[in-house]
Length: 143
Image 1 (tube, helix red, strand yellow):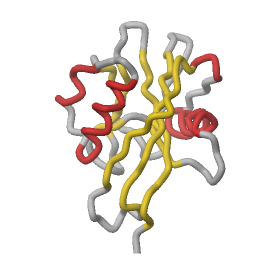
Image 2 (image 1 turned 135 degrees about the vertical axis):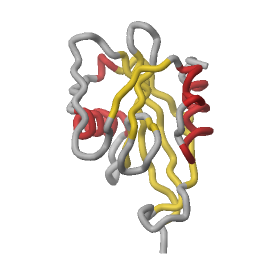
Image 3 (image 1 turned 30 degrees about the horizontal axis):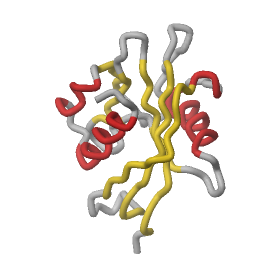
Image 4 (image 1 turned 30 degrees about the vertical axis):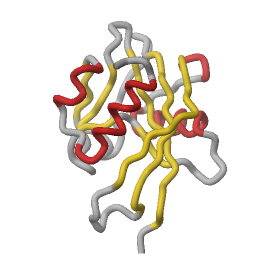
């Protein structure tokens, strides 16, 4: 039986050109923002720092976070065996990318990383995450 909801966090990483980072996911298919589930009692700021290190080998500090939001976004997972939760609720953290940072995809999380204008997001297949991602960009003031 599937668990009801997964608490998670996502990073909206913004570069100097005001483009956002998305990546193609061989695990889930389609494109997604860097994101991941929170450990028990983990604050979402600590969670995004951990997730960015795990997924992209990206070391950030609190100083790289330009904004964090209490408003969350949520999506429902497809009814497929690989998903153990029914839905995911994500806190959003806006991260400022600088040229000193290196992005190195780890494991099978991302195949390709691309920078896009926020308004281009709907041109990419984000599957069941599309509405939540669009709302996240609105919350971040990017749409």
